[in-house]
Structures are given as structure tokens and as C-alpha cells.
Image (cartoon, rainbow, N blue to C red; front, side, top):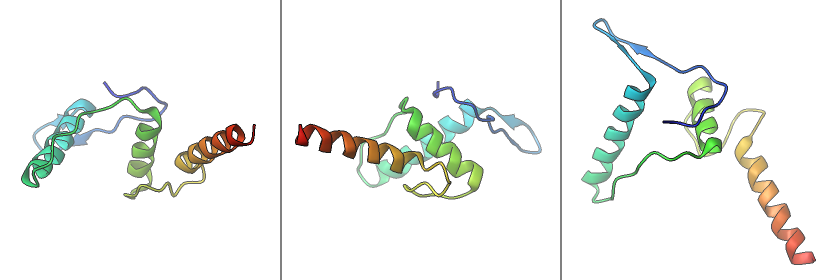
Length: 93
């Protein structure tokens, strides 16, 4: 089950049926792991990283694909900055 955050859960409809969020996630995971297997890489599994889930949902919402956040709320850079600041503070103390 993915982490719970305040975002609408997408559904996809085809002429014959609608797909649930869980079905879409499993389908995407299957495609990713099939591609990884073709390149002799081990399969990946779903995690429960809330920051990663929010970033994935931002990419879906704003229709982009990147490791970098293009929204104003730039969650990834904020977290990196916080970690770097904490490390620097430990080094100085």
C-alpha cells in the first residue's frame, strides 16, 4: 500500500473497464522489472518513502519526469539542504 498523502488517486479508464490505483502501480512495477530483467538487473520493489511518493505525484500532476522537482515546493532540494545543514552543524560543533 502506498504512503497516504493528500492527493487525488488517479484512475485510468478504457472502453472496457476502469483500473484502480493499485492495479496501475502493479502494472508500472511489472513493466519496470521486465525492462530491468532484459538488462540483467535485479527487480525493484515498492517502498514507503513519503517524500518519493509526493515527488512521483508531483510529476504526474505537472506532467514531467525528472529527479529534480520543478514545482515551487521543491521537496527534494529542501530535504537535501536540511541534511547538508545538519551535517555542517555537526562538523562545526
